[in-house]
Length: 114
Length: 112
Image (cartoon, rainbow over the protein chains, first blue to last red):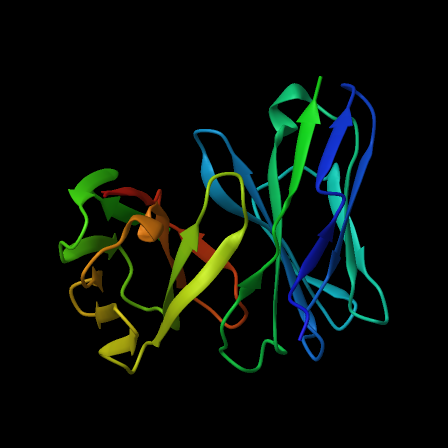
């Protein structure tokens, strides 16, 4: 069974540009979560999507946004990139949030803003 | 606000040692706690999930315990191997959904 897959693996963007990161959850999982792991800041919760709806977001500005598609895959968009957005972005999936279940993570997208 | 702390931040041990990694959290009202492993520059691998009603979970050489009332969890690694070298992260889930709050991690090095 395929795990959580993320693309691209690496992404280099210029300050002010937009970045789009993609995530495919484990088959049967309806919830997708995005986390940011910036150097020195640890892992921080960004966004949670379930059944196509944004359920919750962490303490990040509105230029971090995303969506979830009918097949439960998800996109994370970061607009007006800043140097401090450089980080490893991790996607996780779990069964519908009604079940308190294990979160499974992908390998991440390394975003570098220059 | 939930805060998660992991001690020690780094640990270096010779191969074969049994070791304990510690995780503490400030709010005992949690749904579950997960332990993860992260290799450099990679994603997270789930090791163990402990529900709030459970006291411990075991998988192979790994054993995790949970004491909700005191806000503590420990990850016990038996007979450590060089392949265990990685960063170990604990995370707590405080509400429905899986919006995890992570500790800063313990960077483990097991020397041959």
